[in-house]
Image 1 (tube, rainbow, N blue to C red):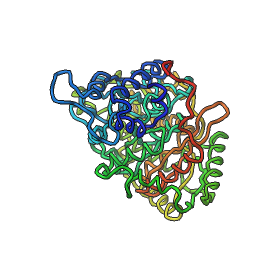
Image 2: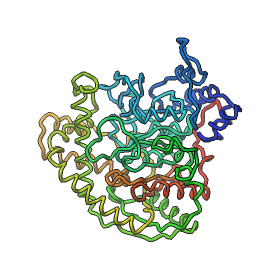
Image 3: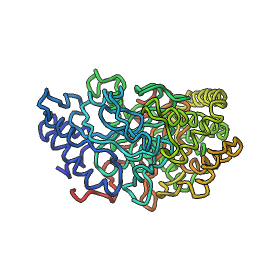
Image 4: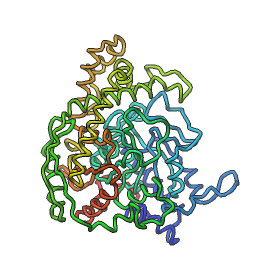
Length: 501
């Protein structure tokens, strides 16, 4: 079953179950075997719920009660993992990668989880994430770093790093992910996967939206069609037959429609410059799209990204403040300094010190940015730009140095505003130099995807990003299907493969 398991995407595995060529129990056993073989190397899974998943797959419960089965959803029996961040699963710890939250167990499923279960997906664990999803790499102190199956010395990205590493390693064909600043697209790029960030409001979210309403949820996957079907099942098309007209999966059948007018953008966004690898990946994607009949036109966005970046950071800091200083509303315990990483504690203090004061101007900047990109995408069908400014970085490359850690401890004690602002600028420069190309589409709410079309000379994947107007996921899926057919990546696997294969 192990080699067969790798050769199918989620839709293919569900078809095998439906045809009774394989059982849901055999699928979950295969996924668990792969997890047990690969996870010690990559540290993607931080919570295991194997026994409950096996019971669901076997259509029985340990207490002898009524059947706790997987139903007849289109993805019934397919093993699935949930990101350990802000998406409650009843009865499973939700740590947010934080020592403070590590014992918090939600009593109810998030609305998205209810739809995930209705689709038939069999949840058997939760995946690694940076503390409160703050960083674009996955190296929480609580669980330790998650590693990229393409190179264990490199990051799988973040904040959905554990999800992407698990999919790239073949543990699951797709996994839950979320995106508040690039956290679906960044790890998809790092791990050679397809990752689509839906439009704002497309998916139901747990709790109140954060300032700027930048967060969305979906998945990272090995195939485009898995992503399309899952979005159908979790965003309001669950009552329609899979692939029917008007669905996202159905849009893939229209992948040979009219040529698109694509704006080719090499602006580095929040980064200062694009690396040679990122430029090569972009040029390659533009040439491929042109060979498929699309019209490519170079465009400069003409945006003051320094001002936009400051607005993004203001909103992010206010979100961090709420998660840290209002933690007792969730856990019932007052937050303590030693329960959070120093960078998280510092960002929360920055949010408390001046984030809310800057929030009105930040929201106005967000409105202006949205109007500008909306106007651009009224003139073009799609925008092509970098997902990341460079190839995946090495583990530990962006962790705070001893001096930076000392500075952060000082500013959270003395709370000197000028020092806080300088430290925020320096820390954000460090992160955005690599991961500064995705945030604008969280601010505008427009859908965007990272597509795995390019690997550099060291064998590391580098995705490229496409965005379109709000509500235009079908356009992105159609384009992705064309690119996938022209440059297949499904069977391109990293060197790390479990010994059980």
